[in-house]
Image (cartoon, rainbow, N blue to C red):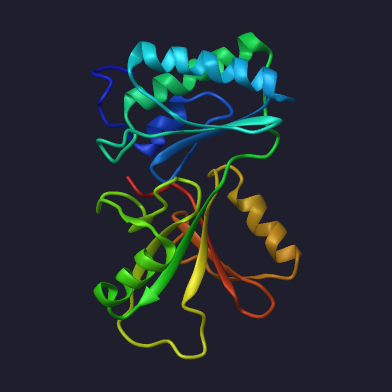
Length: 222
């Protein structure tokens, strides 16, 4: 990668530049590693902190008993940048040096989509009841958990009411290289494909009773 560390990069370019197990989901890089215990995990996190401090670019890090989960985005730019890609690859190298392997399951990210006629009227309720904060327009969600733990919420503008149809649905961001297998598995499990009109940005699937979920990727969003 060339240019300054704050130079934005497209999701496609980031996908080409990052090493396993990092994946692009929405506007963020995600990875998870299997550590087997707190001591090894703590050693890994400490090395990550040292690397991040050296370049003054910091990931979100979650240390669990047997794993470490990471998210990288440039919050000031509300976008992926070369600094995110560089630090992701540095963290991959740290993991390799410590003999730490990725988790077998690819990362994923939940969001809650709410279809509404009047966003300005509905949004304050969800902000209040969830205790969330407003997010910048450039991000993929309208409201976010200040602690960064619960799913983000976004509002989809409707032109007319939709009776007899659910208006709250789950968005699940998955890596572009696993989405087709996930769709096939969902259909094999009794679900149905509602539409692929918007693919490869997202596919709409439904369970046997019609409750919907969108599987989303970074593709065609740049």
